[in-house]
Image 1 (tube, rainbow, N blue to C red):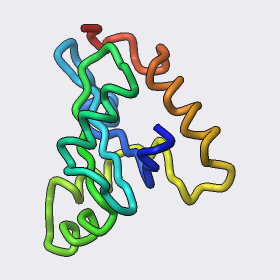
Image 2 (cartoon, rainbow, N blue to C red):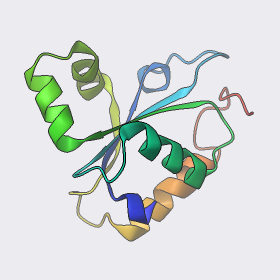
Image 3 (tube, rainbow, N blue to C red):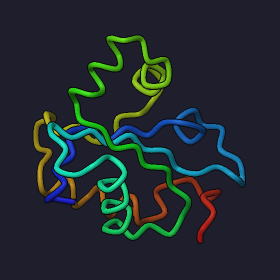
Image 4 (cartoon, one colour):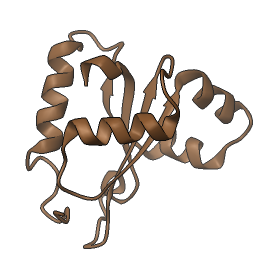
Length: 119
């Protein structure tokens, strides 16, 4: 994920709230300082690179887009920001290439609850 340069990765939805069920997918908001592709294309590329074997919903946005939507009162993004769990932040000390490698390993490993349905 190095070349995608995520700024933040936030887990939201049922796994973040601690109430997943058999049909739950893993919901992630990935922000970048600047998008180099459309949000949909970026999400597809990230999903392919991670190679995860469970249901995952990725939302990719620029930091500016998130800030703009929040200032406009976007309730969906506000809930993600308030209730989500920040898994990665580029501004955190010691986070960089090694942190992104560890994130990739965590997403591929069994770190997620065992109820994640494999495809």
